[in-house]
Image 1 (cartoon, rainbow, N blue to C red):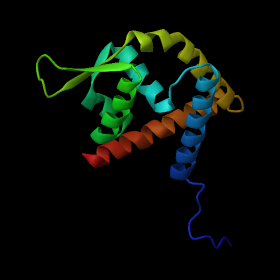
Image 2 (spheres, rainbow, N blue to C red; image 1 turned 135 degrees about the horizontal axis):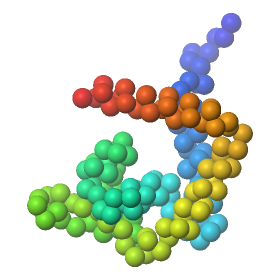
Image 3 (cartoon, helix red, strand yellow; image 1 turned 60 degrees about the horizontal axis):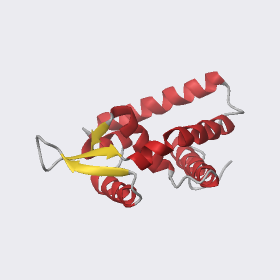
Length: 149
């Protein structure tokens, strides 16, 4: 019989620790290639690159972080010269995020590093298990989003 207060090998603990390890691994690989990006910053840039520009509130929602955390992350990215925040023409209170030329110059190199990291991370995971993992996490995410409404 297990006498532990709580067994940490559950979904929450495993996703948190896997995320931390992947983020640190990606950061080290980016740094090795001379790219000053965190996993969080990479994710923000991908959303911006995919959309052309995106509202700050929408970014926070998609990234599942509060507005204050997103604002801090964007301020750091702005200091690095990776993004610009401009007032929305229709609503000056709303900020629109766009990538800078400096960020765009990192686009292909950072994608190559990320693809390498994912390949290494998933090398011992079957495509079926990977698909199942994504499906389970998407379901959990949807359930939690529905619960917060």
